[in-house]
Image 1 (tube, rainbow, N blue to C red):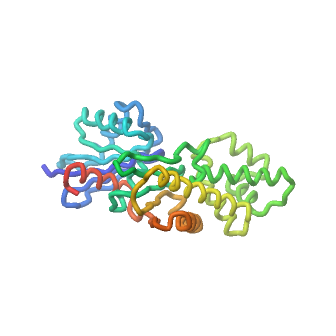
Image 2 (image 1 turned 90 degrees about the vertical axis):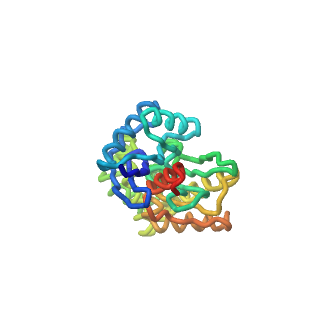
Image 3 (image 1 turned 45 degrees about the vertical axis):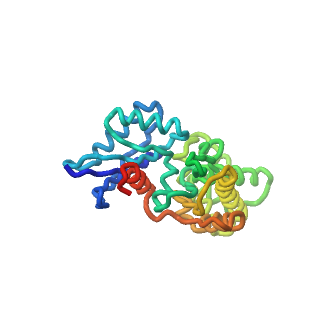
Length: 298
């Protein structure tokens, strides 16, 4: 039976699985819904992951090991507990936070990974290999560089400007169109009545559209989001994160060139020794790389 390795990226909305043979032949890339994913309790999480991995692996192949990036695994202890639970189900695995997939996905062994998607988080490691995290607190109280956080900041800014009697410079009207409402009061209700990342996040492009149309207020929001993402890198560097590369991924930074440029500029000014790279492959590629290293087949 042919042995294979797998990468798994378990995020908040989808689960990505990539399976490859030991010689590097890709057998499949599959996605599953992940709205019900939770990293706790670990026994339930292990069962959830194993069931979906079994559905992804073609018949006639034997799973040698899996590299798993799991949203919600934010400590070494939690990752180790999930590894143990998976081992009890017969799966040899290395588990990291999902953001920690970015550096190996880029073909690197050290560096800082930052995600700017629905949420925002930075992940690195110190010289001893201990993981370091910054941000990722969730869109309600943080994640200002994520799509939901950007919409939250923009809505507050637009409604505050309205309360102060300032004329709309384009941000408010862009949000009204995006949420399909006819006024500031209706916008506030629409945002608050369904206070979820699924409601807020998809409207982030409206903020960038307002920037393109000349809204200074929207520009301030995008600038604040870039500041937040750069601050995550600063916190990790200050705490001893090693590497000369910052690998960025996520729908916001990969889909919004203006935001990417703002982030690059801030990193270039504060940390000229760091190189910012947009991840060209999917983060799940990092799981495959971790699985290969785990089995000595890198």
